[in-house]
Amino acid sequence: MMTTFIDWFQALPPYMRVYWMIAIAASIIFLIQMTLTLLGLGDTDAGGDIGDLDAGGADLGDGNGDTMDTGGAIQLFTIRNLVNFLLGVGWGGVCLSGLMGNRFMLALAAILCGCIMVAAFIIMYRQLMKLEGNGSYRIEESVGQVCEVYIRIPANRSGSGKVQISFHGSVQELPAQTEGDAIPSGTKVRVTKVVDKAVLIVEQI
Image 1 (cartoon, rainbow, N blue to C red):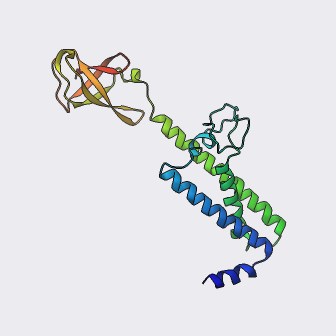
Image 2: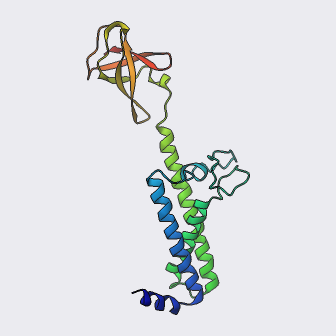
Image 3: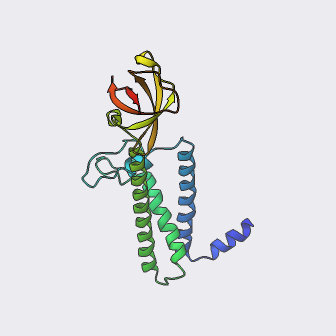
């Protein structure tokens, strides 16, 4: 089978060998990067110096060693983006070779595919960062909200229980106390204030 592949590869025009080598090499590196990222072992520039591309030039990157942008203002030139670009160039050249007989036009189309690939990943990472940002919250925002007791709250602030409360679609479990009677689990309560920027004071509805 290897002999068949070698014969097929050698029969390709030289310029097509280049596209295939770029496509295969970039695909292998891309899969390794994705695997390491999913395992939590890879570089996090996917959500940092790529995802946080800022048109105003603000430095939103994480400053890790994967970047090739010495200024750090716009984290566009990264190893990961280079791989994405080569992935688009390689497979763009392979897939469009049958549609374009002119090598120059094919090269331009392949480069365009590479740019589109980079732009697509930047947009995707920006959206992921927005979703991640939506999970953050300020505890003061809880005042006035209705939530549910998760762990029984003792009476007269003699101890803390827990409530489940939603912030921007993200459910959090926070310590809670009450100034009245004890409140059992599963009861709907309203947050009246926050003390020590950590504990919710709630009342039964």
